[in-house]
Length: 243
Picture 1 (cartoon, rainbow, N blue to C red):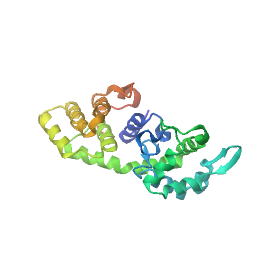
Picture 2: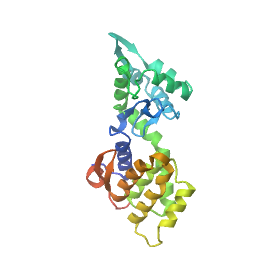
Picture 3: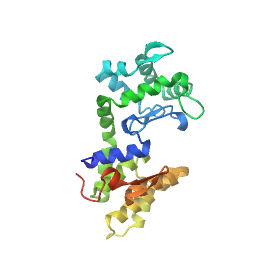
Picture 4: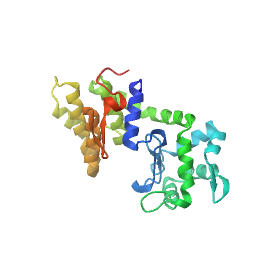
């Protein structure tokens, strides 16, 4: 079982983002080219490139090993190619990815070696450490919101981390909705539900999806992307203090 509240927050958001944690990999279904890792950093927004470059810098031999694959019967070092993609503009990188995927955003059979390379990279402890390093600003943001809104529990940290990852921030309009929905004496769990409902409209057409995810955390249970979750049983998330 996960020990710290930060570990639990990482695990919950990773599950909602794809279910394979550090090896989460999705294609161009959302126009971002390729999304990877437990926070789904991607080429389209330029968030994945720094992680790949950092891994190549910290462990060039490991990086090359993961991106050395058998392609059409030949062993090929793909590392220079992927670093080259990292140096493209985000628009060019998305186009590069799209050219290797089908209309459903999946790498075609001819390019399946890229899936194997990224999955292999995601299992590397060194790259997992880099993912945690690049997740730190999101966690710092969540902790600032904890202090701002006077939250104290582990569940609150998990919710606020997920909000910062998925929404970027709590907008002024969402904050107004939140304050308008709570009483000064409201129990923290009630305030978490109110915050979950308050940020939902930020997602526009995806409000229902965001709301199901945020309410699942706030309540401790729910269905996200068709899968039922119980945060205590699945991740050890409780209403105790952050630890």
